Length: 291
Ligand SMILES: C[S@@+](CC[C@H](N)C(=O)[O-])C[C@H]1O[C@@H](n2cnc3c(N)ncnc32)[C@H](O)[C@@H]1O
Image (cartoon, rainbow, N blue to C red; front, side, top):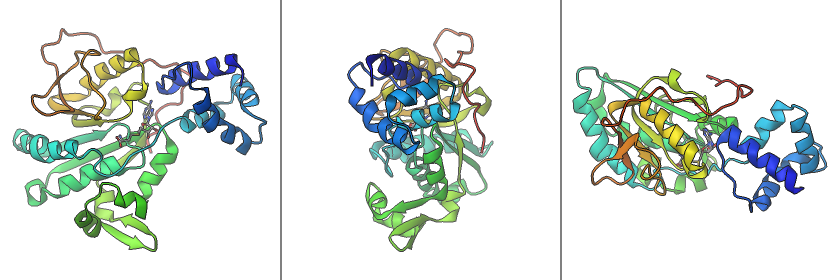
């Protein structure tokens, strides 16, 4: 790969997915894209870049997808799910008692462990949520991870990471070496492709947004723009949940930390009003595919 090819790919990835690669990540790009090029019958990255420049939208999407990091596991970091059970849901049960509906968004849901962990937490509330309209929306840029998430089939290794044994027994059915998530939990989650770099105002507003371990790969300006738009998508008394290594502090005043609950944020009501923030996207990008 020539330095110019690397610069071209860096710019493309930043614009298309928000991924902010430093100047020394050639090895990462090569390790992900050389196998992709070879699978497509291309000699290597130079030819792959030529095809993208010639306008191959399909190949561009494959490159963007190949560069995503999809690491996830059930009840990742544990504390956000304790907050969900002990702080967020009890507050919302009261606040939404007359409306009896909840909307929760897992905004970079990968292979589904996060939205399904949320669904299992909600199930624990049993009759307290009986008759409520519960919506859990799981979105991700990558179609590959969404397909796996929809299937709800996990390996022994995947269910051993973070999932308490009682939950495994209660919510999964063993099929040989795999574990199928039961239909009642699967039915609680809707999966859709969505790129956070694109406008998502059409999704409406949510009571809780989980946006974990994705903004960490973005530059500060891109993060700030997404925080602005996430704030518009959060109910005034709703919550944003970020990953363990993520924060709004020093990046955006669209949210303020929830006292004594690490990783939890509320929309900042005292912020000066501003116009609806534009997504930083080019028109060529594929429209959000609602599936
Ligand atoms: C490291 S995983 C995090 C999964 C889950 N939130 C968690 O914390 O376990 C990051 C996910 O973000 C997705 N992603 C990356 N860029 C994105 C973008 N611009 N819009 C939406 N999803 C994106 C990737 O495809 C990947 O599945």
